[in-house]
Each structure stands twice: as C-alpha cells, then as structure tokens.
Image (cartoon, rainbow, N blue to C red):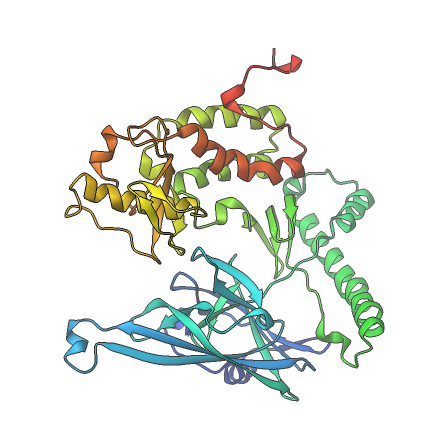
Length: 460
C-alpha cells in the first residue's frame, strides 16, 4: 500500500514494476552498476504496525537467481454485520514473488518476528499479512512455495525510512537489509584532517565531507573488490553485480555485540542527511518479550554509553540505582511476555509431567488455581496458542511453586495474598542476563547490585 502524502492521496495498491515506471516519468533514474534507482519524494509505504513510513528509494536490477512464489492463506472471522451477508469464516490467499535470498519476516515459536531468507521458509510457517478490508494486520500461514526458476526480467525492491526495514509486498511483510562496518576508513579521515574522535562534535561541513569520503570508498574500493575478487572469481558468475554495497549511515559511536545485534548513534544517513538519532537492532530492548519498564532501563544504559560517553563507573552506578527502582515496580511492569505453544499434561494438582517447560507449568498452575480458588468466573483461563505474561515468584509460597502466568492486565487480586514476585530472579533474567554481550562489547566489568560488597579502590 502506497500514498503520496503532500497531495493527500488516498492509499493505493500498486504493482512495484508499474510504480517504478510511473516514478521514472517524474524523477531521475540513478545508475549504480547494474542497479537502476529512483529516489522519490513525498511517498509513504505501509510497514509493520499498520503504519506508513517514508519511501526512500525504489530500485530494479536483473539477476540470475531463482525466483520463488510464496502463497499464504489467511482466515478471519467476520463481525456480526458481515455474518448476515455470508459465511462466518472467510478464507483468502495472498502471494508474493521474491528471489531465494530475499529476507522475509516470519513468526518464531514464541509468536515474535525473526527475519530469514526466502529459501529458508517452509510450508506452515506463519507470516504477517495486511488486511485491506479491515485495515489491520493478520497472521497468515504459508501453504505453498513454488520455484519459478530464473528470470530475464527486472526484479524490484524498496527502501524504507524505518529501523525495521520492512514493507508490505502484496500485503505480505518482507524485509531487506545488510551492512558492513568500515570504521577504519573513518579513522583515516580523522587523522588526515586532524579531527577529534567524537564525530558528533564535528561541524556539518566536515560531517558531509566524511560522507563523500566514505561513499567514494564504498563505490570505488569495496564494490569492485567484492564483485570482481570475491563473487566473480569464487563463483565464476557472469553477473557479479548481484552483490553490491551502499553507504547506509555513519555513526559517532557503536556497540556491536554480534551479527545483527548492535546499537549505534547515527549522525549521517543516506541523502546524505545530517541526523542525530540512535538505531538499535537485535538487542533485548527491541524484543517484544521485554516489558516496557525494562526496555526503559536497557535503553538508558545504551544511550548513556552511545550519546553521553558513560564510563564503567557511571554504568555500574546506574545499574545499582535501577535495581532499587525495579524492586518498586508492579507485577504488570516486570512480567515478561511468553507464547504458550507447547502444552504438557498435569500429573496432579500443581504437578507436571517430566519435560514440561516453564511456560507450560506456569499456565497450568494458573488454570488450576482459578478452579481451586473458585475464581474461574472472574478470570479467563489460558488457552494454547495465546501470548501471556510470565512471572517468577518466591517459591516459599503456600503452594511451593516458583512461576505463574496470567493474562496481560488481569493479575488476579487474590494472588496478592499468596505470591510475592521474585524481584531478584526477574532482575537477573530481564536486565543482567541481556547485558552479557553488552559487557563483552564494552569491556565493562560484570555488575550485580544484589551482591555489591566489593568496591574498586577508585570508588572510595
């Protein structure tokens, strides 16, 4: 779905090839090796969260790669008015055609998104589908994946101004991004012009000059080497241009924990455009399973290092302060999200068969306690396939259990007299454990405010 926002155009569904043709009448086509790229203005495209984001570019190129057609089945229950017009359940199909290495978005076992290349998709995988009639996002199941072979026609792609890098193609969420860190080239530039290490303190002229320097390196050094030496000679292809890099952004500081897991303070983005924003990818505060209050703590830590240049002492001090505030948060603030996808049989009251997972236990305990406490009419039972909140509790409660699940916003008040949240365990699971890779990347010492008995000499 697309719209031209300066002209208040209503949203329209358009074939990407036709879109490229229409845009070529209004905008210049840029040539990057075998790629043709148009940078339109005033267009937005539908992305995850049922929102519109800026359409940065539309590109096309020819490729020797195989194309695959993905067919998705969507089922939806109709509302009362629609039911009078026909059957109560409607089934329809959407399809999208992509290259085998194109990145697609699918739901993992916990009902959260993961990005995988198209050739890794399987029948019965679940993906996000945009329902035009209801203007909402639904879950669809892949029912067919068809190999269309190679093509001699153009293949197209969109670039969007959104951290998710996701847009809806034929109403199915797809994704496309990849990056290479070339900080060493930035270091050479700083030496050449005698500039300070903190890029965010540079004037705009030097920032833009750096962009030109870096872009020239990518176009004249990186791409020729990748295409001629790596792709061409290794795979002996006649189309080495299938792999091409472009400068996505320049950051003043970055925390790179592992592949696709990082935080970076961006000062320049494509255009080039001078910006001042932080981008996160793959780390815990981006995950839907993390409670909002905990995301705020983790975000403060990353922003402190990236934008305020926190040292180790400032980091430790903030974690200690956060722990004291964490202990005062409500159950709804700290309970993590989990998907209840695998049921296990109960062997008795609050007793589970061997091999039961923590979430399976927690959901079964909840359902059994509703009946035991005779409050089943006040609160809904948890059903298989639902996303719920999960909480560790102090096991010295009268039932001797260590975890419990509940529906979001529906913590039974009757539980207040029975359970106390285990704030130590929750802080470890939600804050300290997710910081493991952060500590490796920053070389900061491990901190545990629950055991803060040894002090560094410089702390005295």
